[in-house]
Image 1 (cartoon, one colour):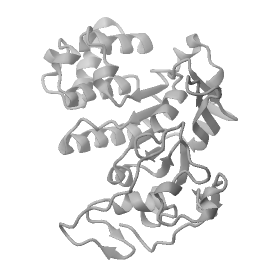
Image 2 (cartoon, rainbow, N blue to C red):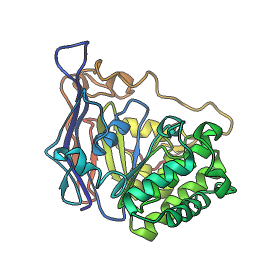
Image 3 (cartoon, helix red, strand yellow):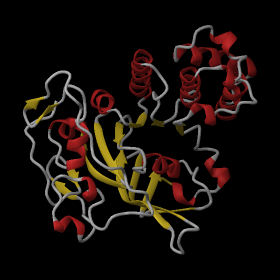
Length: 333
């Protein structure tokens, strides 16, 4: 197993209360070499902070604990900063959500790419420069040699995102964490980038954690799927099972909000309004009692508001869902 996480908890110290705010609760998952895991959920579900915790990039106000958090046999929670330098960027790389803040506006694209490549791959300046040009061409940037001289503020959001992707894949990492890698890109470029990530995954036997809001993306590219809500995993399993037979009301509602979705064996008529999930994801310091989704759930009962809901394991397909009233749906396609 390349990555193994068991009962990961993330707290943040806060001026609002004496006790730290519990952001991510008892999160567990594993990732095999060469596997792609899709992670889906609304903003505020805890997807990004989970990945930042695994990269050792959370601020000092964060308290990260876990029963197990191992990458390739290495305990991630007990690494010194010097030890992180041998893993972060080389063994594990991340495509950040906002390229305009991830890239340094005062340094050229060439400097930032060269720094990553020469630090981790120990290439000569000429070989590193050739690698930079190759990478920019690979992610679809025209005139890559000229573009190396540009600064991030001279690039569009989509172009900056592609530079971030080039930087992340430059060292051929064993694990790539892609945090909404196509947010700033148009549909055509989105597919090119996702196809590129999939190609690199298969070519290099690279593992990928693909974080996205787009269920259509994960249905095409990931083998397994994890649905997060309010800092918890509410459902997990194979992508096919979750897309076709969701058990948690939140997963069902997310799938039902897609254009052209088949819900409860009834296909939505063309040009009708898309259904939406009422309310918003609760803030980490305003968690409801019981099921976290209960204020927005159409199937809520008094039992849902009494105590935390444990994950239910369904064998033999290793499906898990966090609901005491799971729904039975024939198919959602």
